[in-house]
Image (cartoon, rainbow, N blue to C red; front, side, top):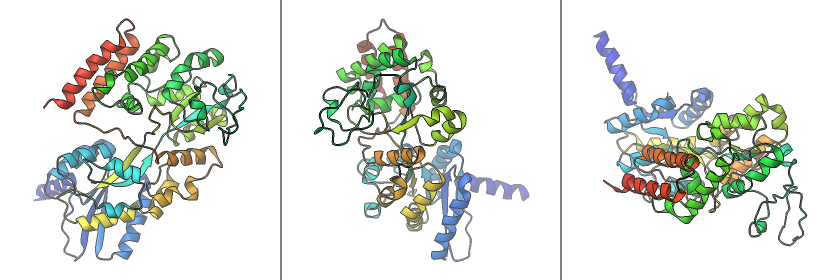
Length: 435
């Protein structure tokens, strides 16, 4: 008998379903991902909600990131899944594709950032409620910049420049000079100036993550290159040839093809690169481990492509189509993701809120410190995130194909880039178009 009880408890835990309690209350089961460090916050929100809804009991379960997708898939395919689940948009889209998620009424989303809402839609239908976001910014070592002639030319076109920054980045083209700020800077501009910066400073201009998961796909998406046809276009060939040129000539570190994001950050902390792209949370590590570099670091917007949009990451909530308490789950999700509760979470962490009122608050319009500036710059970037890179079926295999092509482009200097990208195009098409 004892073994049977233990087995039933194990099954309940794996399914995410709660044991029925005959107390007259509606028991809503909520899963979050890796929020254990913020249990005081979560329990506080739950207590506040339950105080105003005495007929509802929120049962909160925190799931490790490593188990999130596996446990969620098992739960939603079962008959008694959790009522509300915290996921990333890519996996949410996969579940929506399988018909496993409840549609979210868009009239409930009017207070949220519209670009994010649009990015969450699958086939034009919303299945997710945004919770919090992150958007990387660019760290700039101004001591290294001062070793160059960057920004030292005189600006004469006062009518064009309504507001001129203290430094003007000289590598911009005549067309780009019409932009009133020296940033955002594109990958193309970085590549074009890699040699000059290396010669003048001895440091690399930046260390891009080219073969880390879907990093290269995200870069390509910023140039409108997001299909088998686009990856063999002239624009794609030009971009890949730029990367090959600076890599082969030593203007990117040879370890570029193996460096993790953390290892690339260590190069920035050591003063070996001028620019680095990361989330605002990396500032704490920089301050602790390289206070000298931290002291001369300025924050600028994220690197862009020809389309000018920014990347972001997001966590959202979904309601399984088989959930037992959908209305209550939606109501609690809207309470948890309200402006007030999002700002409370943001002040405990380095995340970005997703409601319009929160993003317009003083908290995201503060430039009094480098940390505040990173947060505020990141928040502004959420207003220009389209077109969003869409995950496809066989996404991991696609990442591998693209990353292998990057490795070939950088290392096989005698193989034409066109040849490599033609092969990538064919493999990509076979992966996403063939049944």
